Amino acid sequence: MKDIINRRNFLQKSSALAIGGAVAGSGIFNSGCSATAAGGGELIKAACIGVFPGDIGVMEKFKMAAAAGFAGIEPNTIKTPEEVAEYKKASEETGVKIHSIMNSDHWRFPLTDNDPEVVAKSVDCIKTSMKNAKELGADAVLLVPGIVTAQVGYAEVYKRSQETINNEILPMARELNIAIAIENVGNRFLMSPLEFAQYVDDFDCPHVKAYFDVGNVTRYGFPQDWIRILGDRLVKIHVKKFEPGREHQPFDPENRRTEGIDWPDVRKALDDVSYEGWVSAEVRGGSEANVKEISARMDKIFAGENPIPEDEFVKEDS
Image (cartoon, rainbow, N blue to C red; front, side):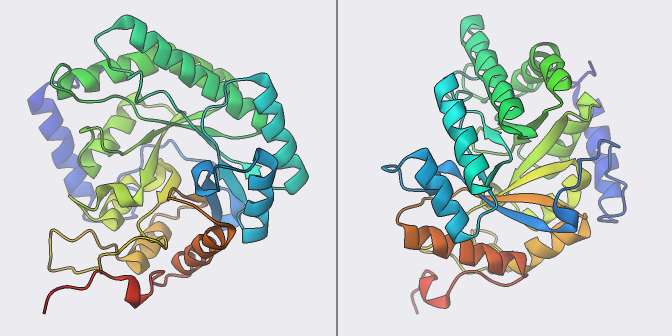
């Protein structure tokens, strides 16, 4: 494995990436690990299972998804054969595809924990998620690769996560032909798009990709910038911070503290890197009407429009 914790090497790699970023979408960032295109160049609309009401059954959730215009659903790790069969039946009968599995235990059992037993439990859940994916026709498993804590430092998370993924997870991923989709999330890790890109490239493997969450970088970056840097490393997209029922920040390019999202430029960035495939809402759900509104707003995002009505923006003091 590469000397990933050598500061000079890392800075040299980052500088090379920064130079390449001057020509966004040119292929300079591409590692050669291309994701399989889906949907003939189109974005495909999906929702995480949590978007749907929690008090209805799996079949009802899939029917609601179909009625609202979602082509896919992303469930969490499914722990029993009976539940797998239930999801498979719901998908087959409604035509709503299960396109990815959101691994569920990487927070409770971090992959980079100091305790080997915790790591083993994390690996077991990831393997279950990969088996879910294979049985249900999905092609990726979302993975939070580690958590930086006071007890486990940043460099150690980098090193441990790559070693464990390489040694314990990738052999099965290759066997099942499932992508391990690394997500950017609030784990104090992979805090810049250059580092995220380098982290994926370190594996030099087509089964390790980037699962980019548009809403998870707004406090310290611009999602369209991350998209253009990650390029063809991208295999899946999550979207949030557009849904009804919450106050929204308007996009303000002059305010570095804003969490507003320039949705038209996000859409353009996806075109710039020729992203094709699944985009899933990862938002708080609710009633059927709420689910339909989420779907309608995603249609606006896909069309390159602002999905948020002006009356939902946070009103600043005059």
